[in-house]
Length: 116
Image 1 (cartoon, one colour):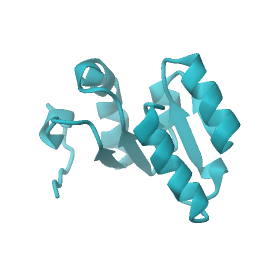
Image 2 (cartoon, one colour):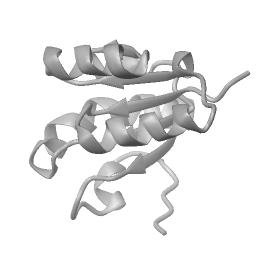
Image 3 (spheres, helix red, strand yellow):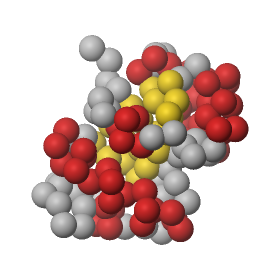
Image 4 (tube, rainbow, N blue to C red):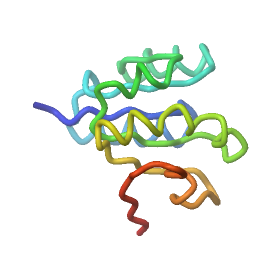
């Protein structure tokens, strides 16, 4: 069974990472991209062949790995709804959000964090 990866955010960084995974043999069907922009989601579907969603919770429902790839100014609204699903599924969370410590993602939840 392939590892399922969800990208929260469909900007340049997320698209580059997803494209790199696909170029190295990762199946596009195992990737999901979530974003608020229909234009970004359409580009991800067309260019990468990945599943897309406007709903972060739906996108993360079956994710083994969640890559947080949003702008720092929206992290405060993006993370609170995801905390429960991350704690329940024990998903690996990878953040590529500039200047945001990983500890900010776990506030008030029993989530194991590792920064490297």
